[in-house]
Image (cartoon, rainbow, N blue to C red; front, side):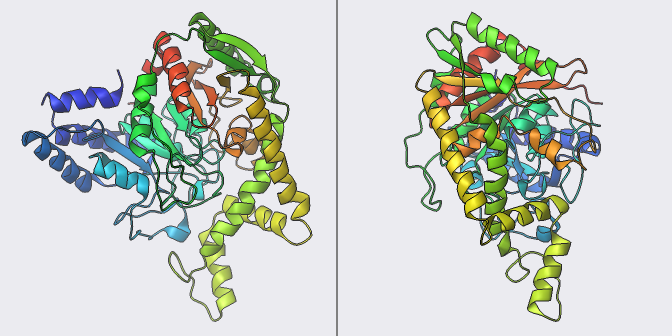
Length: 483
């Protein structure tokens, strides 16, 4: 059963109070944080006060929604009014937003309990959460390994049961890749389905907020709570949000599944990952799905395309951190000196690297050669997906080429780190939804993720296929053995 549904039943039957449930998660955080380091800020008193309000509503005989009283962790690039929001960067070390992001406001209004803010790669730039300016988050399955990134803190918190569910953001795989590394479910929704208002921007045409959970049903319930039109986000889609829980079936008769052939020929794919995903595809066949191979010939161009577009947008977005309006400031004798020193001291190495790449790609004489060409290739990648969805309902492939690597192993090799996002990036470039769920373990006991990709606004199909697979296997019931 989903965690949200189980906790909801305990609340409405008065078996446990919201305060008791919240305290149990705060106790788990206190016990495990010395090993995991998922959280940058824990808001215990605030969480218990919110929980007491839910208990008062239940005592008064009010009906509560599914998310009321559910303890949730929030990635620390979501603005939370009155609570520090750092983006794991020194430049925002003491930034306390004067307003609430749309998604966190929707969760608050639904009665969800915010336990705190989770660690990430600085400004969500990275695939290991090692680029945080504050701490290194451990993977609950092996704390010497990374939890993935950039939503590594959220994924690790879910895997370690330090929250019921969590929110992350996904620009090139930042929800799905840590979900795969930590053995949890991660959903990157269709671009525009979830409001980005109050999400600190990295690459505005790619960023999307989504759930990290222990089960597919939990992801469906959490998406239900945060999706929907927001006039404060100019890219928000004005569409009807279906009841995603109605899509959860246990057979796939008549469902057409395409296997992206290019992903199995990818450079550096681990044999254990290939074997686990092939076994998962066979399971989909056993559940009644019609499986066929599908070629997306431009899939491999996603990586170079992304690493021009995303840094270009980051270069533009991060220009606002100048020491003038908010955030850290190095007071100096001239305006230019203040800009230079504020940014030199405030930004970490990976953020500086991407700003420089992006600024170069947008500069006079190089714009057409790099940025404009990348946008044209982006269109071709999107057309490959459109052709594929003319033949099948969903596409499947590994989420990541490997399982979680050791902390420090790739710090000096950014290109090797970037290759880890090979299979997630094209989904962001095309604005499509993608779901990662556990499908096995390698011989070192590290989780492996299966990625299911849908056409725009077809999250219902991702939940349908993912839920059927999940119910036929027990990978989602495994959990790390933490002291």
